[in-house]
Each structure stands twice: as C-alpha cells, then as structure tokens.
Length: 99
Image (cartoon, rainbow, N blue to C red; front, side, top):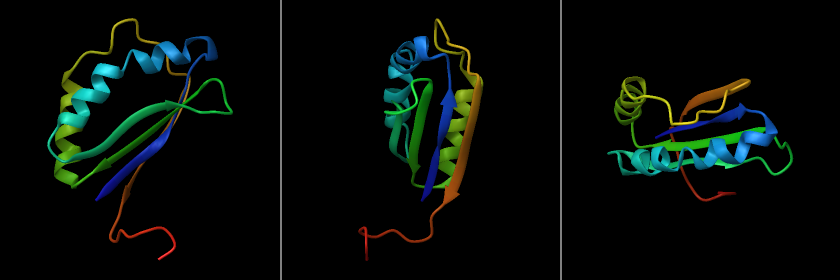
C-alpha cells in the first residue's frame, strides 16, 4: 500500500474554490483502479492550506493515476499554488491503531 500525503498552500480567499474546483478530480481518482482514498480538504487551523491524502493499493495504481494527471488539463478557474509538500510513503504493514 502507498500513502500520498501533504499540503498545498493557496491564497486563503481562494482555498474553498480550490477544493470545490477539484470535486470532479477527486471523484474520478476514487473511481480509478487501486484507489482506496483520495481527498483534498481544508486545514482547520491554517486558512490558506489544503491537505491532500491518498491511499493506493500499489505503486502501479499510483503510477497510472499520475499518468492520467499529467495528460489532463488543470481544473477550470485554477487557483495558483503558492507552496507545496506532497510525499509518497510505502507501507509494509497495516493494522488497527495501537496494535
């Protein structure tokens, strides 16, 4: 399993538009083979920060998703990203919290 997690910084006045403008992308990504979770969400403390969280069944599934992103255009009315950190984590074991 792979987890992709990080943040994107945008103008606080445009954060909600940034997230809502990606609703179709989130749904399409969730429908891709191997996608377990895919979400952009508002950081509850930083008004200009958008959190990204994804879970993928395999490297192949994530690679196919990234290829789709590279070949598609940006969402309409795209908001400028001012900064970002998005990292990929390869998970070798999964279990209930605290186990």
